[in-house]
Image (cartoon, rainbow over all chains, first blue to last red; front, side, top):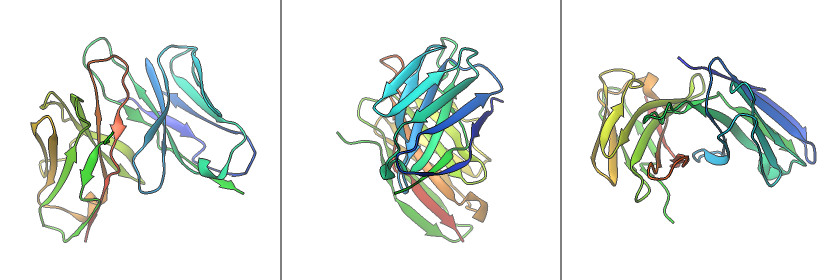
Length: 114
Length: 115
């Protein structure tokens, strides 16, 4: 089955620093999603990418859909304490049918020291 | 707007007992997903429904797990009998299939502990 390798597993940074995390896949996806999960809550969508090479920003967040369709990265600039949480990448391959299954990475735990 | 609503938020029970988790998707969403999250395995899709019909249940771990969606606004995930290894956070998510590229919206989960 499809597998996603997400790295790093965890990061400890100082407030104001930039953060980068990425996901690689053993197979091609045609959608990449990045979610954030706060303690005691469900994942919340941050950025969605639908096209190879696409670069999308959402405030201080920037994500790219790799040109090979097998990878994606998420950058957070000028981190703040509320960025703390677990970040997940997720990929989907839907071949024009009704496959809406997402494959998730294991997550990156981000800690921001004020 | 109301999001995906799950109940209970926490459940602690003894092994062997039946456990029922509930989910109310976002109104108008025609896809519903059940996930399980553990430290070891991360987020795993268990089953998903389209228009109340199960489409893919290949992620359901074994026959002790069953899921139903009797109508567009309600779904249950049952474990009978429950075992300690079923302890996890179970998430429900929904999405609209009417508009392309709509993301899944997650509930806040049910934290299940089987003693």
